[in-house]
Length: 359
Ligand SMILES: [Fe+2]
Image (tube, rainbow, N blue to C red; front, side, top):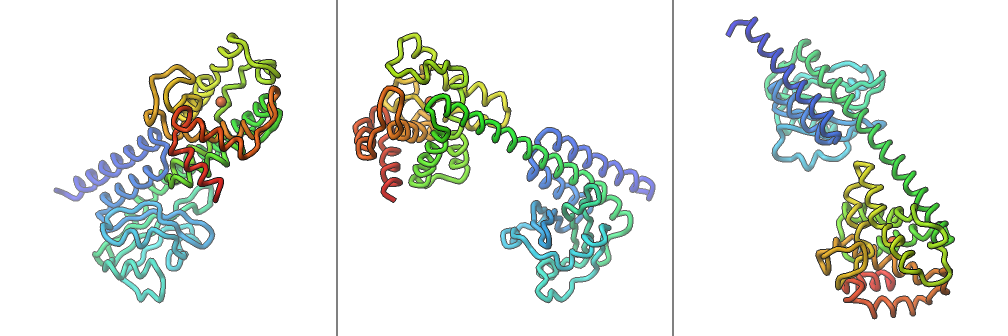
């Protein structure tokens, strides 16, 4: 292959890699996945033995994505002091490091020494003049990187900067949306129970159950947000029904029973809260069958998050005054949970809740 042909092929490879990265950015919206893809693409394109992407926070670098390191990756998945990488952050320009160096405690130099990586190219990921992160490619070959490589890697650094900025914006939007929903839930609490913290109390009890059951962080996060938003569907229910100091008529019950479905519909419109929907939709379904909305689900086919929410919600409701009755004592509420364990409530969840209350 002639030099011109080789150059053309390199350019075509580079463009195709950039195109794939851009496509993934618009379709996934998941920062970790995009950075993993960029690390892989630059590793392949630059024929690197190792490629890594760090995000910078003050004086430390957090490894976000790596390609080419099969062993030992776990040991470097922790924040490291900038050390030798500091020069690229300070100068806001690519830096080439030739030869392995005595580490002198520098974690990046130790890594290069451990894997005999003789050439490193470090390129800052810049966004409006601020260094968000660093891209590094390393190879066992000596003096391997050129000015051309710096330019090539800088193109990908631009894509990474966009991906990071997009992810931050998305994260901010999500937080803003959740806060609005929480505010809405507290307004509904005030309308429904006369207090603004019913949903907060349900959340604390549900989280206690989740801890007692040893659930994962992911499940705990779903339970936390679903508890806070579980009655968001009551927004459409008349206050005269919510605060009625007497049993509801059949017609009023019909309206009341719509709130799990209305809540699920509201959350489905957000587009990123789908994992909360099963808990909210089924939080009034009984363990032995029945409740609302109408469903064939019973026992363990009811999502665990909904079974937890059901116990936490019932306990907190019993413990607070309602227009038609005074609150129950702690002992009375516990006795009621035990009485309905196996019929209305999942016995495993009731047991976990009692363990939490004792703890
Ligand atoms: Fe409810």
